[in-house]
Length: 216
Image (tube, rainbow, N blue to C red):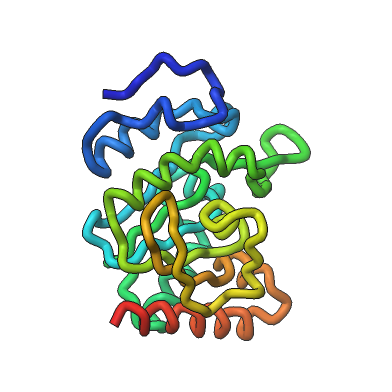
């Protein structure tokens, strides 16, 4: 049962978590989350997607425009690039669980009806949404977490995280009270923005091969 006594925008998702149940219960409860102000402008909560038996969990930053419209993570251009990179690295995308540190799309736009422009979530917002990610990891119990970008890294590993310093390495850390192995890399959207997209893509694939080798 979801506890609904929390005040609107309580700045933590904790009161909205269900008392029991697996991923379906979490997904249903997350749809009603009012744990931070981001729900006000987003179309819907975009919860994680994949099997509870997945060996690897990929954690990104937040849903994008297409994810917000469709209600699933990584279905836009960055998600398609990620699927291609995973496949090339030797990880079947259909066997991974994908999610984000923040479950609502944060955006800005210059004028009404104009294109919605992604805006990075801040520490307060990633912290507020943290209980959902912790609950997902507790249910899936992955062998490995692939950290996609700086925001996801800071949400999991703290504000001192720098993706450029540790990308493509295997880290062993305690995350939400559980020992985890993690491989950080860049977010696939950064590849799409890169001046040298091919080189950036090769770097992403190289990092994901480290993750694939860790799962062997």
